[in-house]
Image (cartoon, rainbow, N blue to C red):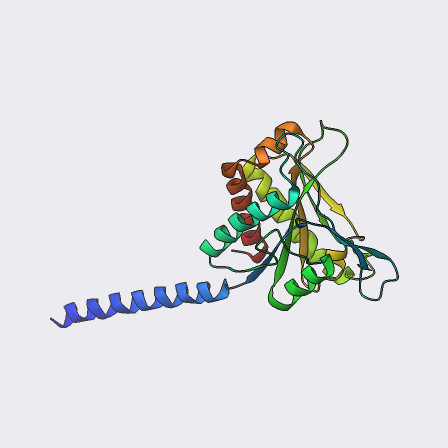
Amino acid sequence: MKKFISLILCAALSISVFTAATDSKAVEKQKIIAIDAGHQARGNSSTEPVGPGAQTKKAKVSSGTSGVSTKVPEYKLTLAVAKKLKKELVSRGYKVVMIRTKNDVNISNKERALKANKKADICIRLHADGVNNSSVYGASALCPSSKNKYVAKLSGKSKKLSEYVLSEMCKASGAKNRGISLRDDLTGTNWSTIPVTLIEMGFMTNPSEDKKLQSKSYQRKLAKGMAEGVDRYFGY
């Protein structure tokens, strides 16, 4: 009888230890991810400083590009993927801050960064590319360089975030990985105080990629891959 009771106590202790470890990991994983669905229904050509204390100014926000085949505007694509990315991240235990949840807004790039700074640990900015050459395709990531006069200290972590999110997204979706570009002229990046990456999910000016980007199943693959990249960044 004593042996039986001892076995029960050992089993209970094991379950308790496992539960505590699981709960600890769940608490640890309560990182907050800001998702900024790029652009909006109507651009705002009023200007704002490209960074803290900057004399150079740029338009607050544009409406972006649009699909050469589907005619779908970029701002609709970015929000559609943002919502799927939120769902995927929440299912993995993260908290998510959506910079916008609808298209009819007026939020400047500076304001988007400030909102992310207040509430999140990292920020993922979602965009899509457009060029005059319709044969160009593939995904890329933009992040600040170590020489950025506003956010140089974020360069290393932002580059790491960019590498992980981009590579995992391309792996999951099959998109061509065009690599990382160091950009120091992005207002939404220069006002950040947290690691940030801008993901160009593909070219809406490429007929084939434009159609693919509008596929819900493809969008889910993009979202799942980006979430995998976030996991890698935080070491999960």
